[in-house]
Length: 205
Image 1 (tube, rainbow, N blue to C red):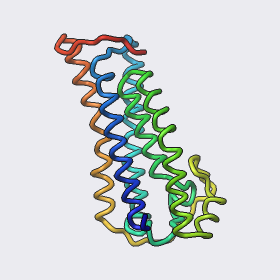
Image 2: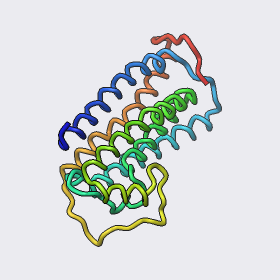
Image 3: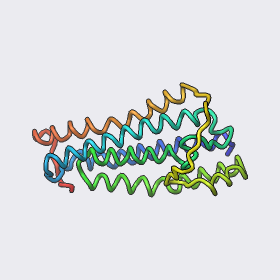
Image 4: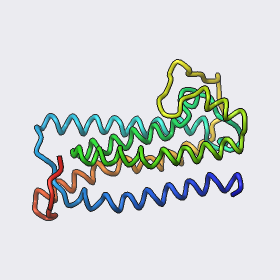
């Protein structure tokens, strides 16, 4: 596998697996009802979920300003990449939590979080193996100094200016829009279930 083919292959695999997972989860969401919570509880879950989703989209877009177009050229250690090695995945994780909260079903939240953790742990290991082969000692040093998942904010550093490639920011923002889609879908499903248009076969907590 060539240096340029490896990240492309991993990206396509992630996209394919994400679609498979969505096809498995959609029936569970569509044909299940939620337990009745107090209105303030549901509102709190939805708004916290929305804030997590916004943080995901803004965070991923901010990361793309530092890494867009250069991630295969050198080890990026500025901005969010100075405090955690995988900030894009960290922000995606916030988005997954946001979607789970907006579903108003704790079981869906737990399923999404567990699936993300189980799936992305080996994905990150494979990507790091590729980056070690590509960049050698500089990336090994980066791995030794910067945490993989939990940001160490005291290590934050950024240059006075960076070269930003607008295409990558725009592309990342468009990709991240998908995190906003579930909320109106959840609302529509709840309305259709309340009307009896869509049956539900199980009730989830």
